[in-house]
Image (cartoon, rainbow, N blue to C red; front, side, top):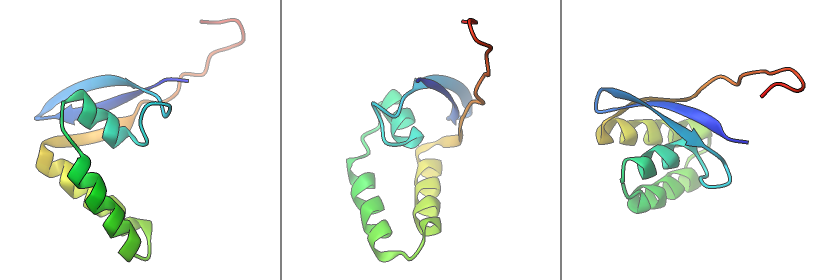
Length: 87
């Protein structure tokens, strides 16, 4: 099932369809949409994850890196609950 990502890139709000089938995280999806190569970032993220005792260090590293790239808010839009038979 596809979800919608709402994100800000260089002070411009954008939306993007997202599915976990294609990307591991919403951060990877927005970077791909903006044409940003994350090869080096993913390597560093794995190293931070290997040496840290919790997920907070990884989350902080990711958030700080994406701020440097020009991203602001990156969130999934709320799910719309529909009744049976509604499209």
